[in-house]
Image 1 (spheres, rainbow, N blue to C red):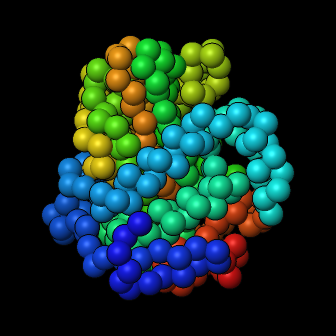
Image 2: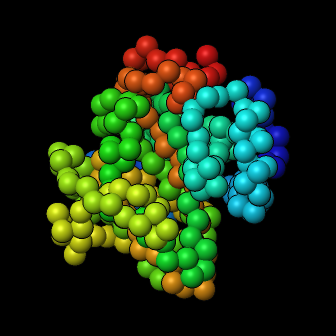
Length: 282
């Protein structure tokens, strides 16, 4: 853990800030809004924090499903989590509260603030891991399709995609199609084989030009930032190297949460609420 410094406290959580402020320049922010993404090719957090997060992920990645079910059953939330999402480590901070140490950490929030402003809510998180030889794809999608019942509008939501391993074309790095965050979400859907795809439904691949896709290749500890509305996806991992990330999603509290906080738990991560939302920590 970091050496003691400026202390921040949350219910059950104590974390320390070491003064590091990884913010984007004004030019990088403008480019982000034009393209819908940004590659932050610096270390997003201190090395000891990254090592501790990786260690916790290793524990969760090998945890038996029965243990996950037991921890989730003991958690104070009723979010309707099914076994597929539990095993896939989607929203696992709801039953593993140690993850809030990273989700509410100043180094990550400084990055989110560059995009969504000073009033920040924690929306969701997800470890996405492609083990060596894991040929499961992440089909082309934008997050609006999955989040429409939860929050509106969707113009100030950013995903911090933190690489726990080097992420390359070889092992299935994320790809984006720049500028598609300006598109209307009117794509037709198709069904995907749930054993070969991260999602059972996603956009039809013949509705956009994949040749415009940009691979977001980054090193361990670096991150990409992307808009919730941009088209993105990833190929399977046919390589001998694992590709794992932790996706941390944040929104401006100007946006209105549409689901009761017990059903979709959110935290006020920084600043103040603007839209009259409720939060776990208020």
